[in-house]
Length: 94
Ligand SMILES: [Zn+2]
Image (cartoon, rainbow, N blue to C red; front, side):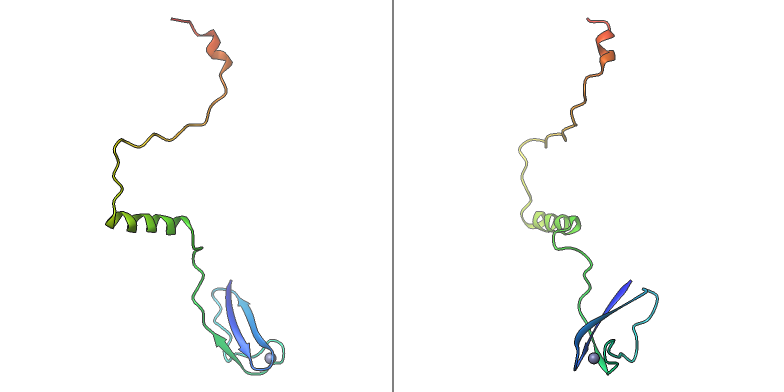
């Protein structure tokens, strides 16, 4: 769905929600009084400010100028602890 913002001189700001493949209503009219309205343009909200993509982009940008220096290989990721398998008790002991 696409959201279009409009402002009416008498009623103020209102929004119109339409299917994404439908064009914006032209000429715009106020949903309340039917008078002339003006479309408001705003930047689309494509991502949240701290999305994973944003964090990855910030990390890549920071590493271009100040690469992190590692003195040892990074630790492998921790695996979740598994409950012991009771069948392991039956295995022959060395
Ligand atoms: Zn109006």
